[in-house]
Image (cartoon, rainbow over the protein chains, first blue to last red):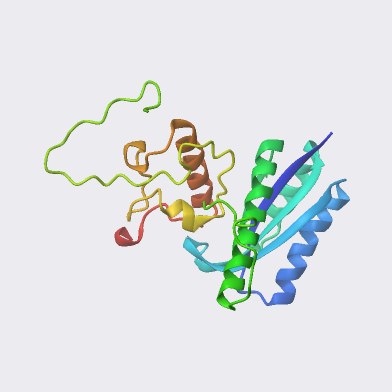
Length: 135
Length: 87
């Protein structure tokens, strides 16, 4: 049975973009090779770390959402441990309720951003009907 | 209406309430994303410590979810273990 997971990892941001991209691609490949399917890859991007990890102050964050068999997680995590460009990783299992909540939040955030952008440009947007509930 | 079993707040004369409004308005948060560090920062003090429920005003359930999210955020360096002033 396939389960829904999200795996966030931090890649050494001292590398150039191509190398970071390779690491992300390799991780995705490891997931698919072990029978998983990628749902979404969110490249959060370079961010300052709240505290230094192995003497580095910045990192490139990526969050991959995927569906996979439970026993393939072990292999994916093993890959991430062995790759020395990956500074940290965290895999979470998402159940249906969490997944729905996450989707709704993402949709609401996107809508709010769109409305804000539209308001800034002075474009006319349909109010009330589309306005999401404030967080 | 107070949630059942909640200790009534102790009256402390001459203290300013630091209690903040509950962002979930008592609703079930279901999923608190550890990646939303700006949002989680609200539940920590300037040392990076997690605020007690007495100050966050969250329901017990939501507080547990927020706490879990903050701890995950700390591991992934979204939030500090030790705040700015103490380093």
